Image (cartoon, rainbow, N blue to C red):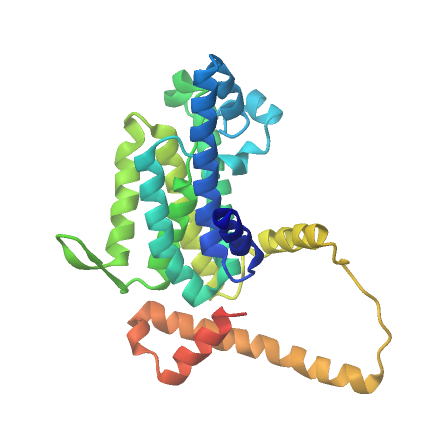
Amino acid sequence: MSIVNDIRTAFSRRDNALNQLLLINVLVFAVLIVLRAILYIGGASTAYNVVMRQLAMPSDLPSLLRHPWTVLTYAFTHEGFLHIIFNLLNLYWFGMLIREYLGNRKLVSLYILGALVGAVFFLLSFNLLPVFQARLGIPIVGASAAVTAIIVAAATLLPDYTFSLILIGPVKIKYIAAVVVLVSIAGINGGNPGGELAHIGGALLGFVFIKQLQAGRDLGRPVQAVGDFVANIVSGRPRMSVTHRSRAAEAPAAKKGTLARPEQEEIDLILDKISRSGYESLSKDEKQKLFKASQK
């Protein structure tokens, strides 16, 4: 089938992280819809709850210990059309900016770390704050924490970048991010406090991630290392190879290594300039350097 081939092609490309994240969310959503319909027709609707317990992250620690993988699977699981549509639209719009300026690996790192920090905020709040004790046990699903991390990260990196919104017109994304955070704070005392708390955790991660990146520290390196490890296992490539090299062969490599750090410092300066004055303030040469760096 052409659909199967399209999916296979999307996951075979290494420079396609945004589309892969979108596709994973859509596939999980579609599978759950079909499964729920089949179980309903077969008179086994209660089995659907068993499946969701393997994907949704619970708020009580004993249940989480039995399903530890849910700290990530919840961020790819949705149960409502509006929920997934809004999340995927925001992931696409703001994820495009992160991918363009920081690359695919940073985008994936932001998504994963945003989901994890959102999960931590959710768990700590429900287990430590008395006001939420009555709701302990309620699970959480959705990519909102991860997507909020990407929204705030994009706004921190490019605060004056503008989106044209229907019926409103051009709006700087720093104001969009501010509204997203304020809505989450306002919703804490509403019907979905766990989700709103996770959003706030993701927002904090997005802000800190960019600030640390501008300071020369990449918080996403552990995520990238795990991803490379898993990719090597799946592809069957060896983790390490040992070769004997001559001194003449080692010299160019050493020279290349000495240039890596100044290049990163130059990119950090360009990112700082974007934060201060916007993308339009960059020279043609600076834009080209930033574009080349995003392809690495």
